[in-house]
Amino acid sequence: MREMTEAQHEQARQYLSFVVAGTNYGVPILKVKEILQYEELTLVPGTSPSIRGVINVRGAVVPVVDPAVKFGRPASAPTRLTCVLVVEIATSEGSLTLGVLADAVNAVVDPRAEDVEPLPTFGPGVRVDYLAGVGKVDKGFVLLLDLDRVLTASEADLVAQAAALEPSGPTHLEPDSLAVY
Image (cartoon, rainbow, N blue to C red; front, side):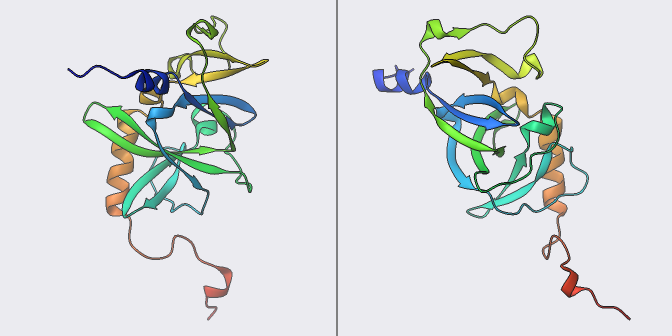
């Protein structure tokens, strides 16, 4: 097995910090493939409410998860700062590429090992099993997500099945396209 270089070790400790429903979260930078400007999503019937739809990323169907809904909060309303983090997670069947809806992206943070606290016992308002820890950054905190646990295998299966059945064509009807007889 190949050993990691010092630069790879440093990257493994870095997190991309972003905001969802007023809370700062972080995901390992090595899991982030790209950051896309938000564009309208294609709705897929029959998926979990936290799956807001799918996007086309260079010909691949990528499900987009709204962490706000996943964490029991109201759905995020897109703004000019809204973006989609395209990440790769590990599932029981291998890896899966998905989008994570973010209200805004903050920065890459590099908390030292001593600045990452274990999960609090009182709970931070999200399912504790989704978190890898709490990072102290400057004067605040970043909830460090365990992305491999955020999307369950059953949700991934639903997205894959629904995307395969999705007809090509408009995802919604514009009022001007409706004919009245």
